[in-house]
Length: 502
Image (cartoon, rainbow, N blue to C red; front, side):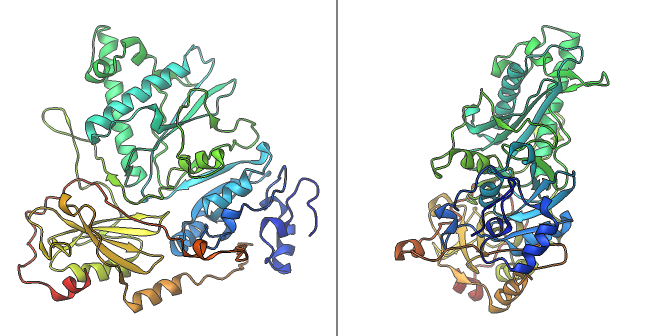
């Protein structure tokens, strides 16, 4: 094999041994699309395994095309953005473990990668905290972060009944001489937000409470709000959260504008183009990842990705800032979601939606949550509480149907505590739906924009145990109880079509 020269990783190494000569020629003409690397280590064995992450790697010039490809292809792919040395941004569809494998080899100057947070996708709670240094202000950024974390943990507990501390928070630092910058990524225990719009609603609600407290403190320095009491915070520490930007405007040091559609969020150990200030673990970080990977930095990278939620057995959090007459918060279940048809919350798979809807009639789909990483869709059902475990309707608790896209099957679970461990036998999706899914997955290898995919899996030296490994998906999803008292109950006589399947 040829050796890499001039600090480049050759196409045959970067794209895999099965890449064609035609693709190599095209790539050489666009040499800025592959990374500058410091070394060329062999591909880790776990990435070569038959049951390892998909090796698909496809580059696009347009974000919409990359997002559509990931949506159609599934397989745990995510959408990323990387900047070339000329400043141009290209969009990448790849599994995050393969991105880390290549990205971690780059010289820090050229490691300018961002995650695209797709709208309407389950994601983690995240924050961008920053302020200009030396703009007529002397701030203790570390103390400000601690104060802010205490307040966030307080609101998470009183609103969602989830108790956390700094051990659940990845604290990334990208501070320079002119700017204090931190990214906080919350890995909540057994919970995630349904999308970044709901994350934004929650963040804006908390910030509104902080601003209100600051206004009162400005009038009365002895004022003390509820979260100040519970978190043992002084008025001066709250006032410190107010910073001045370069234009002299006063605002909170939490950026409330990073919760928009398809947001780009810088990934671990990446820097902004032209700066050598990568996001690294702060000195105050105490988060420790589960020992699932031998590479500590890779696990931090995965845990810090906002939309990388491989565990779909989660409580899905939703938040809509609605104030009642008593000036206290209330959670409105009708929050912003994907465009919905009548009595149905649409997933990225309309044909599967139609099948599930017909299956559970006269009940209907209340909502669906798509877990991109594990490629599963969880449907919460109302109006039909038939559970295969007890062979009858539950009196108060609802059921859910889980569709495993990779396995082309579905099964039933429910929210009744007595059935918390029950999972029905898996049933295959109808052949016409499977055919439609297979047809969607048939994508050309080469296109005119030098987008490509390559399979570098090594099937040699695989033993029977490795080939037989499977991943358990979707256990109990803890979520708020749905009040479907106004929905027509499923009749006492059984719907034989539904009963036979669950």
